[in-house]
Structures are given as C-alpha cells and as structure tokens.
Length: 271
Image (cartoon, rainbow, N blue to C red; front, top):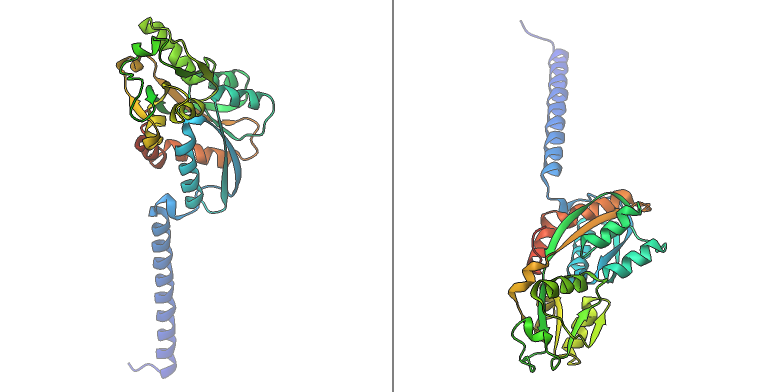
C-alpha cells in the first residue's frame, strides 16, 4: 500500500525526535561519567572560602606547598598559615586566636585542645618524625654521636621541653643517660636551626625533615638513639570554625595521597 506524502513526513519527523532524544541521553550519561572519573585536581571538590591553619614550625615547608596545591585543585579557596612551636599555638588558640585547623608536632599538645573540647571530632594522625643532630657545614666541632652533645666544650642548642622537639630531646636524654648542657633552649625547631646555620652553635637537635629542608646551610648527623622518641603528628578542625566543610576538605587533602606524597618526599614517616 502506498502512503501519502504527509504520512512519510510524519514518520520521518517522529524518527528524528526519537533519535535526537536518544543522542541527548547518551551525551548526558557520557558527560556524567567523565566528570565522575576525573581526578580531584581537575574539579572543585571543596566549598569556596578561606581557612586559617595553625601548624607546627616543622611543617612550614610541606604545608606551604600543600596549601598552594590545595588552592589550585579547589578554585575559590584560600588557605592561610600561622607556623610556630606547637605549645605556643595551643596557647594562642586557648586564648581565643582565630583558627580553623590545628596540626601539632605531637599528640600531647593536641590532647590539650581535645580535653578542652576545642577540637571538633577526633584528630587524625598524618605523619611521624624523629630528631637528628644539625651542625654547621664542615662540622667544625667534630660532632659524631649523641653522647658528644653531653660535652660542655660543644655549644649545643635544643628546643624548650614544652615544645615537641624539646620533649623528644628529654626522652632521649633519659633513655641514654646523657645530659646536654645546652647553651640555649628555643621555642621552635626553626630557631634552633637558625642558630646552627648562622654558626652561633656547634650543634642543634632538630627533626630529620628540618635538616633535609635546610639544604646546604647545615649538615645532618643521624644517631640511632633517635628511635626512642618518635613524634606523631595529628591534625584536626577547631570546634569554633565557621568553615567546617572547607576545613575537613583540607584535612582530607593532607591525609590523602597528595599530602602523604609531599610529606614523604620531605622525610616524614608514615603515621
């Protein structure tokens, strides 16, 4: 049977509509799959806004790098930092200083904030670190062992015991029976490193990561006794933060593959 021209036209239009709908459906599904499989660095995965991160001085290089990478992966976000000794940062936070995230160089200082209910949820351990002896280039005092630091003829600088690196130093002193007649006790590893690199001290106890990050300005002297004092680094969001989602996104970034890679490259150990 021969159909009228109008019938052919109607059938053609119907087929075109069906094919077009199918094409749109296919395109939509393909687009969704593409976005879902895209790496997090290619799309915004955190809400826009600004957060303030208080972090231990020994994290300055790594966290500065991670902050830059986090912002690049999440357009519209800004991460600002305040670096200092962990105990100093705790004092600032308990005194009301504005902060969204806190990363400590030990669990003891983080516990002070959790006990005061100033941390939201449970902090996450993200790295470990051990001490190393830092000496000026050429090691003019000839420091070779931890026991050498017990000599009064060697000008040694250490961290104050309230600071994680100082607490670790005290632990090693107790374990070895070596008492260091330090010429000064500093509030952060950064200050210790500065006195060694400037030649004001013959030796200083800092973290392995600090020696590595200092490049040629100091030389590292590893010592086996450092294993008796391994510092664990926890990170958590402040209960007072007004940017909880963004804070948690940054914490996830630090504890995720990108953050762990940067920390490992800097010499930090696994938590």
